[in-house]
Image (cartoon, rainbow, N blue to C red):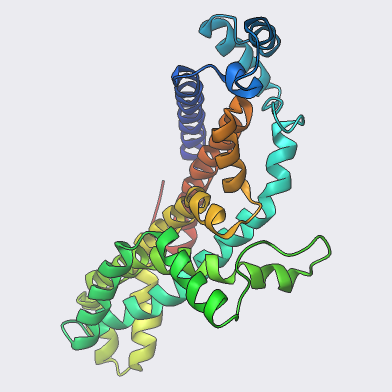
Length: 313
């Protein structure tokens, strides 16, 4: 167990090193001069040259890379050029809406997908099974931003049931903020439920035909107990995997949805940073998202042992 954890930690370090390198190179090889973009069209060549020197952009890529690695080892993600504040502080200020949007969306996706997926597998081949599969394929093909616009038009503009955008005022309560997140969370949750539903159905179908399920039924156990205790428990590993991947995708996929609904989250911050060519913010946000991907995958692997004692590392 300890050996496996050490191997995974070593693998995580290698993955993050590759991510740091790729992000650093991609951000800097994109066309355009960030100093010229920041100063605007009226800037003189001397002003642009001075700003490039101040930002260290006049150095070679190798020197910039070594300096950036040194900053990361100290826990410093850099200084935002436009916000004039540390990138870490900027990300922490925007983390709350993104975090609750991700959690809320995952809850909605799970509440939709898990019961339908389990029941569709139990009633395999029935009309309900076919309808669930069709709806899952349809939901998977819908862009979340388009669904968000439809929900906004119907429930916010036409019926006035929810706010059109925003995250509430500075003194808003937790319930008021969750009220503002309802429509974007449903937009993300409905789209994400498709994958969870299909995996849940497939995983349940794999175990419902096993011998121990027939034995449990032969003993006269209640059907609900057979499905939820015996079948679902042994089908949880693939479901946990897809739930973890969905959570990671929701964190990165919230970028467009936050922009559509005007949420002051990390996604909106990233979009603004891209438009302004704010290198430190772009790099910091991408690294944080990549680190969350890695940590979520690691946490899911650790949960396998708790869910199924037969798993040994």
